[in-house]
Image (cartoon, rainbow, N blue to C red):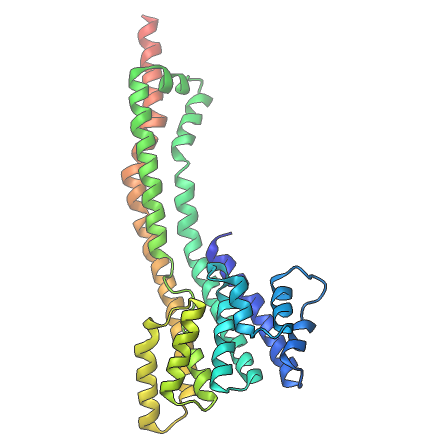
Length: 307
């Protein structure tokens, strides 16, 4: 499983946790008790560790970050820590805040899954074509020719082997770079906008809300600068139109995730084309050198030996 897939699973898991926390808090359960009720039988889990720290009067956001740190596979947990910290600082009610955060995390997880599904086909194609040279060698052996002996036992075979292996290595590096360039650079699109919505829904001024989100994102290692211009634009529109900023911010965060899904599909389509370059320039020549050339050398050698 890839890192991105693990991250999506994490966001789903955290969304379920956050929704349960929201229900308990809305029912009047104190936060330390709410955390402890959710632990269950697994006392060694990440949730249990957070619950113990919260029970010892450590703020929930600090407890979460002390455990997950800046792990790339814990974006959901870091989002929860940021949201909890922003709500506490801005005075936003926790139960509605967590309900909105759960919906946002589920949307993030769905965005990540759709991007991974779009990328799966070209990535699988790249891995499959990497096996072509080995298939060529095996094919020659099935036909009864000593292709391995030719590759390792003759000067021409050694030359083909060296160049073919170099081409395969180059294709592997090239494929990896193409795949990395197609993967999303921001794995929590729109989350910073949701955090600002949480802050302003607590009655904080826009400047105080922005400062609170900046601090929370810095502590939680979440991207913020990329969304700053969008936040400023939405807050300006809110002031001019006299409408609540929180609703506009949440609408913009949903749009950011929609764009992320569209961009992921576009990058996947581009990747399926660009992967033809290492296939044509590296893998197919390697196939000829490792699979076809030894076969021809073996045929020629056996023919010459017969005279």
